[in-house]
Image 1 (cartoon, helix red, strand yellow):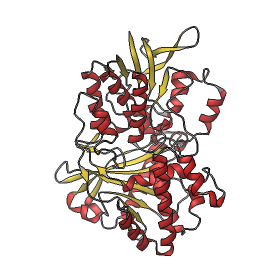
Image 2 (cartoon, helix red, strand yellow):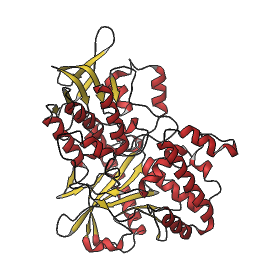
Image 3 (cartoon, helix red, strand yellow):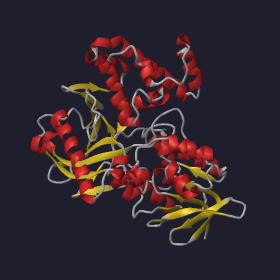
Image 4 (tube, one colour):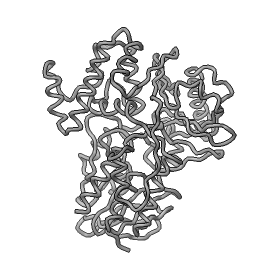
Length: 469
């Protein structure tokens, strides 16, 4: 069997180019090892509730923005995405809420009250963030940094902490919590450019995706099929297929089937799995293997819960981040976590997703038996559940646990290396869409230059445009 393009992986990074290329006339076949599409944004249902898989921060659904541009080229209607009117909130300890308002003046007034000890410096920091973002959006990021920091003989290698030295420890913790939540990298190691992009996300216009973010993946899959493309679920790809000259010409399936890609192969696997599994370490240059060994990813621990509708007023917002001011260093002591509340589903109760970053290695190496693993998971659940009640006093019995998920859970469902589901730590390097083979491309969160789904979709649109020329 031969197609113009073969796509490995049915996350949004695989589905988007598959839908666009199919709509533009290419023959496309997408392989997904699971029984549903979506990957990390696939539909998550427990106890009759449909849970958000993450933080509930969905941007770029306005006219002319990335989803509008993508779905405008497809034969299916784009998902309904009404604007959310409430602000995102960061709650520091002692119930100090900072509303991340979209309007600059309102936001400045907000954190001037929350951080009286360094209001001027905090204002200057966010002005710098705004200036750098403006320059990044105009594709002159390097020149912007050189001009902005020339007075200090600094350069783009600065970390976010380098730029925050004149602010208070509380304000630094406020920024650190956001970067850990959105980029899973703290201020001491996060490069300032990616930090600027991430810090704008909670202050932008946010949208609620009707029937959940999984609808986006499902609608893209529907578009592929309507355009004549093929989606094969429960079809694990084993490796790339190579000819006698070492050129990748297709893929070999676990079933033994060989499928030819006459123009391109798109991997929606992680960078580690793309080279470690598809390409194979024996074909991966030593320089690439060295880079991969240095790159770090993070896992997630989630609690899916049900909240009494009447208890919503006790929360700082329907979507918020809780940051502990005193950082914990021991295992299963989570320093920050996000809360996202969905729509009522059953008996006036709302689905709630509580999410925090976690190291992946202990979930696979610590346990010597299944009992050890269960004990480890229960300790994490107890710690995060207790942190939630300390952060939002008075919840009591109004919220109950439905299910939990950890890196082993995500490994079982996605086969991503060590269950890492939060991209790559934001340092100073990242992999692009291109690989060591001219006809093999990579699209996904580990090859994205910025935080979130819009960045993945943007790179997928770029790739689809390239392959249709």
